[in-house]
Image (cartoon, rainbow over all chains, first blue to last red; front, side, top):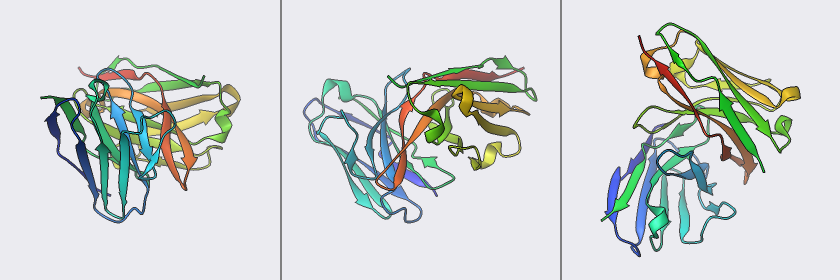
Length: 105
Length: 121
């Protein structure tokens, strides 16, 4: 299953609403997860099953979608949110999207 | 707190072998699928392999099939990745990750700090 994540990078300001999309080459129902990774650190799960917020993750993060089209939204970007975000589908062989780097405008 | 600690990364020549280990603690290791995920320098994440709780099922990305073997020792709460016939393109940080199950799907809820494998002559 191919994953197409867009954009590959974006520049935004604190307080902005940010949307990242992930499209899969075939339907994966809701079996889509979102991760955040900061430089030199392991990834951290934000959203699983397309829309379920992982415990401890701020509510400004949300996920929607099913089938082949998915979205991660950050409602109001905070300084600690500047990072790279990855989508991942969970059918074998598992695949990740190419990543979206969110940096400061 | 759940901990995953990888070890075994090193500099190795093309065609060489290496065995990575991941020591797990503070959770019931034998109750979870486990996976290896890698990240080449400056690149994105790539799933490498996964293994079922009891080791009876394993899955691999095509690029490592026949060269890498994932295994586990539940008595030692340890996960392994035996890497043979290493190629330059296997150079990456290798992460061990725990597969958690919820809402009929799996996701990686805990990750190790990663161990660097460099394949170069």
